[in-house]
Length: 259
Image (spheres, one colour):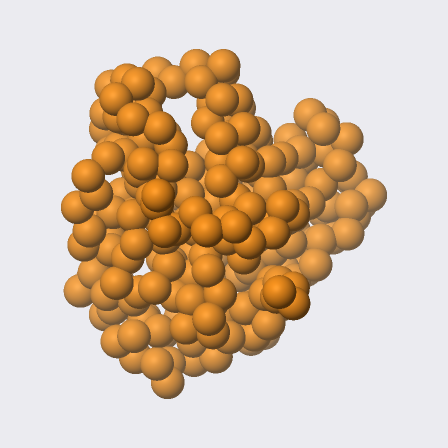
């Protein structure tokens, strides 16, 4: 039996990390957050939800025996892809550039999410790293999640694309589960101004209130860690970025149920 699948709780929360625009730093923030949660003793599963350009296994430096491509080709079950990283959390890896995942159909996506929901009970928290954009795959994964952490930078196009995710959630599903996390801000003031822009637009045009999960400042140590393919929480644990992510963890950390 896969030891990762020891029973936990049937109502495991699911958190999605999304961004309308690529390059917002979503995946890096996702993995750093998962690491902090694991360090606190939580059993965390990260699902690489970028069906076409998955790369979490590369960023973590792991070589899984099986990945999502194998599941789609019916070589294994989804549970067989679960791989433990040396950061303490578990990963369901996608397959970067794989033909089988680039053209995954709606029924396959639904089946994968149903299986993921079944597996989630063995963990304290499931984190989904969603692809950039606002296509059906992105929206479906944000709907699957209990809440979505929408990562955006102060760049106007990043703000616009992040707002598009909120708008499409509202149009498609009639409800929004997003909150914003500002990344690469020049300071708290710029970060708050960025949050104000998307929050005001969502309130004015969609009548939706978006909580602010935090402002991650631009930090050279964070940039250095990314270039070195390291996680900032390990390479530079005193970085201002880590301070913000510690607060984020406090907001999303589920309460462990008594045995």
